[in-house]
Each structure stands twice: as C-alpha cells, then as structure tokens.
Amino acid sequence: MEINATFLGQAVAFVIFVAACMKWVWPPLMSALEKRQKQIADGLASAEKAQKSLELAKSNAADTIREAKAEAQRIIDEANKQRSAILDKAVEEATEEKRRILENAKNEIEAQKDKVKEELRSEVADLAIAGAEKILSQKVDAKTDKVLVQKILESL
Image (tube, rainbow, N blue to C red):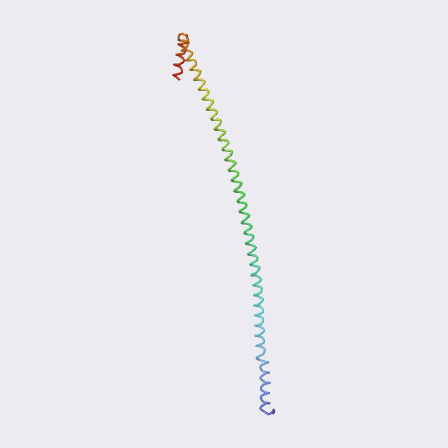
C-alpha cells in the first residue's frame, strides 16, 4: 500500500468531514435521540401508570359492585322482615276480628234465644190462662175436659 497525495487528501477530507459532523451534526442528532429516548421512557412510565390505574379501577369497581350487592341483599332481607311483620300483624288482627265477630254473633244468638224463650213463656202462659178460662167456664166433667183440651191443642 502506497501513501500518496490522493490518500493524504482523502484522509484530510475525512478528518475535516468527521470534525464538521462532530461539531454540527452530532449534537442535534444526540439531542434528538435523547429527546426521543426520554419520550419513550415517559410513554412507558405513563402506560405502566395507566395499567396500575386500570387495575385499581377494576378493583374499586369490583368492590363497589360487591358492596352494592350486599346492600341490595340487606334491603331485600329487611323488606322480607317487614313483609313478615305486616303479615303477622294482619293475621293477628284478622284473628281478633274473627273472635270479636263470633263473640258478637254468640251474644246476639243468646239474646235472640232469650227473647224467643220469653215470648214462648208469654204465649204458653196466655194459652194456659185461656185454656183454664174455657175449662172453668164449662161444666167440669172428664169427657168435656178431654174435648176442650183437644180443641185447645188443635187451635195451637
């Protein structure tokens, strides 16, 4: 290999080119690369943060749903208890009403029965008096008494 002027000219031109590149091209290139590297790192950090936020949101949503279900079940249980209490109270009131109606009906039946007995006693007494008057107004003998009693019985 021979070192001649062409080779030395090319070497000097290359050194000048490298120096010019190092002074004017390399710094903006490195700056752009560092900026891009920082953007990528920030993007990755943001993505990681977003992933954590998403997981936290999913966890919170699951907790909220679980709490809502528990609250709904508690409300349903409370409503069932209230329904049972209302039904028990209604049954108790209906039983009391039935007892009161039966008591009133028995009292009314007893009153009607007493009234009918009193009316019957009054009628029997009136009939006995009427029969006694007829018997006493007629001649007293056994045959006549029998006939009068038969007529009284037929008139009833």
